[in-house]
Length: 431
Image 1 (cartoon, rainbow, N blue to C red):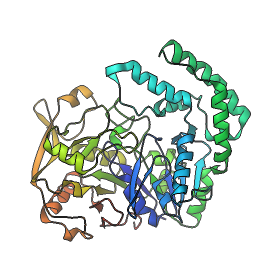
Image 2: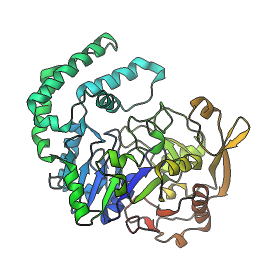
Image 3: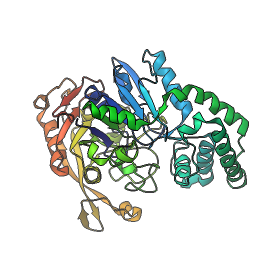
Image 4: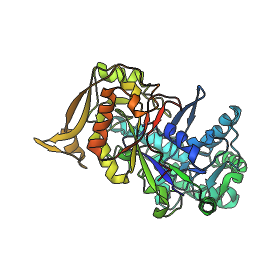
């Protein structure tokens, strides 16, 4: 019963969706354990592209069950839209296939209104949020005034909490942020309508986990965003509002740490990030343009152009320690094909000294310069490779450096966008 956790080892957008889709074949249950609709997993299966924001990527496997854990903050409108979109594509998402934890906190219209009004209020000091209400919803969760999925099943309780919260939010919106107030009757009516459809999906997930455990099945835990967007361990304050690290698979779904057996860190073969925040290896030249265009680096959720740069192994090594990574899955390696010389950041130079970890201080981080190791690129098409020995020698050297610097073995190498464009070195479920 080896359970596996998939986490991003950079700033998100590492290609976790494809790896989760691949590993789902060996799982009985796929669980999303944190984040919200500010994340997007893009999958290409049978030539068709699917983007999942809330529903775990494993839903594309018709015989598999999926779950959304309590660590997620859920926008019911987005979830229902995903259910309908997948259904129209011939992929049924029924309560028998998808469960929603009754403890999951619900994103409300006032969360989005506050999120967007704050960003407008900050002007040039914006953090670069998606404006989808993720942060304000987590704030209410910690402040113990949040509305949970179970409240959607109890109209009176929902109304009572909504009235109390909206009174405070409208005052804040109008008197401080200069935004318009929200109407309680519209919100109540809209959410009760959505609650009618969602109620059959809402349940205590601990029973699902127990059932899989009893029959010695496998659970795949799917994270969103990346380690360096973690609210505790990332480039604060340019972070998300949750904890994308592997330990959250326990608190965000409802299992103990002994239930996690293998942790896979997803590493894009180069580095990207969306929004503001420091980026040591960012490129502002033709190499950056080449990677951005060939990699189609646009946010799956926002459509924003991603900032691109060379692979930063200091960041990946930090992620290996923070997550306790057992293996790495390298994605989008094919995007680098055609570049004559590749650069890999193996350290930071800070005030004349070389360091091997990212400073918590943004002031110090801003003074860091990348220490690069230059290696030859390759021009051969690698998308047809299905074994590591079929890759060009320069490509294998690139992968060897990743293993050598991080000290973490590779388990999967993605050489193309399609499901079959993958080299599996070691199956994480076979531990």
